[in-house]
Structure formats: structure tokens, C-alpha cells
Image (cartoon, rainbow, N blue to C red):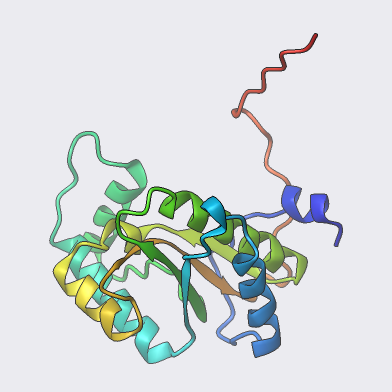
Amino acid sequence: MEALQAIITRRSTRRFEDRVPSRELLDKVIEAGRHAPSGHNNQTTHFIVLTDRKVLDELATLVSEEFSAMDSKPGMYVSMSNSIQRAKKGGYVFHYNAPVLIVAANRIGYGNAMADSACALENMMIAANALDLGSCWINQLHWLTDNDRVRAYLNTIGLEENETVTGALALGYSADGLPCRTPLERKGNPVTYICP
């Protein structure tokens, strides 16, 4: 798939098959993330790749419990408030039961942590599309990175003490076959040209 086509046709997948993509495909997606730009070429984004169903299920339960204990507040991100409401209803699985979750982390206090990780996650989503895999950006672990229970669990699976979760990526084969590739109409993101 040509690069621009992979970018324009990338859509979020929220229903996944249960099978884990091959290590070869996972490595290609991760390499795309590792080759993303970073401030001063620091290359400090840490990728924690979860394919163990037991770990994914434990993490989903923990995240659901922690969101269930929270209340929505004015000014809160709409998607965070939605996560809280969905968790309170029960059966909430923040990573959509994807067979792979790639957690992106970066150094605490590093000014480019979010930007570097965002570039890496976007590269991985585009690579996934080009490889016929579905993907979806996941924010819930970022929102809970300072939650004592969630952080303690993440530390047991590879998050370093000096790191913060900056995002995550649900990844796998779309339950609908190939990922949806119908571009969404652009209604926002205005463009202003200043030309001579």
C-alpha cells in the first residue's frame, strides 16, 4: 500500500478477532513506531507489547474497577467521562478485547514525551493499516498512569519507575475482515495558507 493511501484510509478498529498476529507482523508495526521522530532524536519511547490474554484480562479488570470508582466531573474529557460511565455499567474492556496491546511510555518530566509517543503510535497505526491489521488509539492507561493500583500492576509488566504511560494501541485482525478503509469526511482541521 502506498504511504499516502495508508494514511488517508486508516480508521480505528474496535472489534477484533482473537488470534494474535505473527511475530513478524508485530515486529514490523513496532519498528514503524521505533523509527518515528523524537525531540533531539532522544528515542526514549518505551514499547511494552502485551499478547498474554491473562495479562490483558487482568489489566482490563483493573482499569474497569478503577474507572468504576471514579465520578465524572465538569471539564473532564468527554471520552474519559464515557469510560467512567461504561465501567459503572459493567463489562467494560478498555482495549476492545484486542489480542495485542502496545503500551507507549516515556520519561516522567521529559517535555517531548507526549509528542514523541504520539508520533510513534501514529506510525504504528499507519503501518498496521498497510499490513491489513486493525488498530485503535487507547488513552485509558494514560489517564490512570498515576493511579496507585494501575501503576503498580504496570510496573510488574515492564513500566519503569521513571516512566509515565503516554498512550497505547489496540492491535489485531479486524473481526470484519480487512480494516475499514473508507475515509471519514473532514469537517474540521482548517488549513490556512500564507503565500506570496
